[in-house]
Image (cartoon, rainbow, N blue to C red):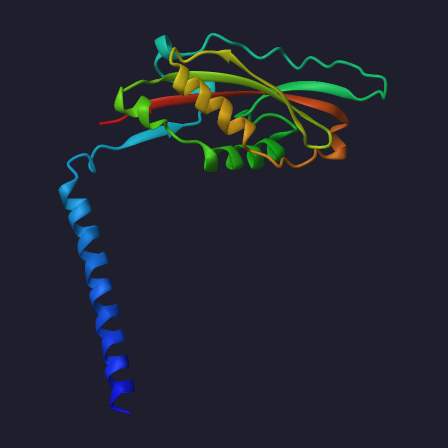
Length: 181
């Protein structure tokens, strides 16, 4: 009986001690890191919202070109941030999925690299991602690779709604990487 009480007391003391160590290590990590107050941001913006002309990617979306295929279905091209399109609800869902996976590469942050990567990719009516490629470079390989990685890892994608009557939707996505002090 005494051994059971001793065991329970020892376990309780051990748990309390571990919680105290974890709490203290969190406090020390936050107070001991001088860079905690330096934030970085990764923005996914429409071209109209990008204010610095020198940083704008020089790429324009073809104005709603449609291409026929043997099944009488069309293909269309649209910017991911476009709110004035019949595809808006689908694009909004896709953008949320991409935003959750998108990171600022650690090495790029350390070197203070910034820029805009423009990626073009296509989604088939079944929701398969095809033909992702870099259209305009940010000027830094690591930023461009991250933009491609996030698009390629965004799957599984939702099939295109039947109401779109598309065999393929081509999407232009602009990834703006910028640091804030």
